[in-house]
Amino acid sequence: MSEIIRYEVSEELANSGFVEAGDFIFLSFCVGNVGGTVGEQVEGALDNMSDRLKQVNLTLESVVKVDVMLRDVWDIPVMEEVFRRRFKGQYPARKTVSTEFAHKGGSNGLKVQIDGIAYRKNKA
Image (tube, rainbow, N blue to C red; front, side, top):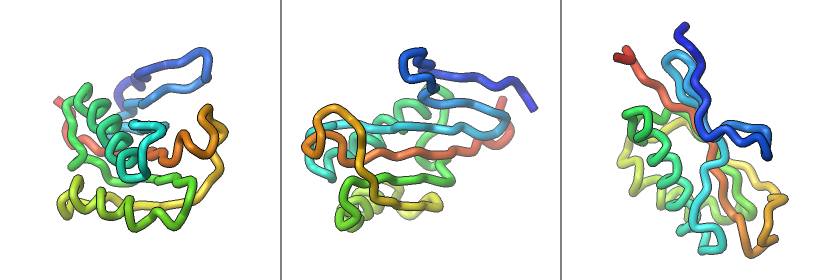
């Protein structure tokens, strides 16, 4: 296994935004457009994920697994519509759960968070 590389390391939060380990990229706390609609936040989270993947020369097509956390489980159809548009049939395996976020902004703030795993074959 090659070295483990940690990106976006936060001493304050005691975490890394994403970690490269061998052929896999582990992405955490992908969020965006906080305070917007659920659809806007799903788009923002996928934009955040995509921007991180670009740093290691990958795209959303390399994502093989996601965990989607929603404030309201009834927003799953909204999330699925965005996924159809963004993943274009190349869907990752997915788990979707509902959670109360302990995040500034309360119930009008964070509504969506996505964590993911991407795969890179034969890193050059």
